[in-house]
Amino acid sequence: MKGTAHVNAFRRGWIGLALFFSALLLMPLLVVEYQNGARDTAGLAAAEYPGIAPGVPAAGTSPAARPGSGSRPEPDTGAGPSPLATVSTPTVSTPTSTPSSPSTPVGFAGVVEGETISGFRRITLQTSGSVGRVTFVLTGPTGRHYDVPSAGPPYVFAPHDSGWQTTEVVDGVYFLEAVVDGSGRTPVTTVRFRVANHPAPTAGR
Image: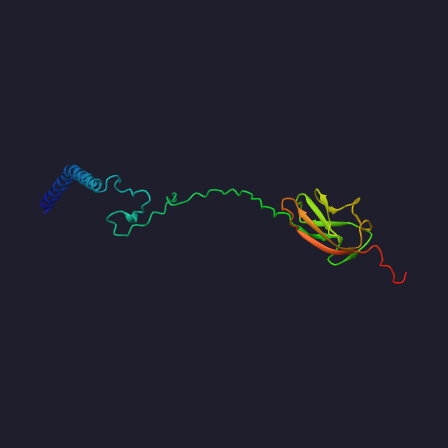
């Protein structure tokens, strides 16, 4: 019985040793076969998706967007400039000058329509600015005209020094007109008044 046990143990030892050496011989073959299969897989991937390294996702693409992953590709949210972006150009405002309204005569000052005056009067033509040369035309009860020019503002009707001494004319109704040079003899404004410096004589004297 002891001899049989020794023979069985010896046989098991030889079988284990044979299996060990078989594994050593097959291991290089298995490694070479695995490497060849990996190269074939990489070659197929490169041929189908050129420019993309195997196992490395393309720029701007998540791993879930790679072909064959079964997931929908995610949009590229890169911060690059949009081709539709517009460049704002600063605007430079140019000051515009508002044209001034032309100067116009307004009316007379120093006498009003229908007034009775006497003694010394300072009568002026009121304007919104300089209207150029003005000629005052005085027409009395005799029908005669007296032209009194005024070169510029203030436009003063001054037959005498700085005004008009009404005692130098006869009493009666007068018309004073202002005519701007360049408008012909058309008056721009007119006023009617009465001069009364001499009282009417009393009846019976």
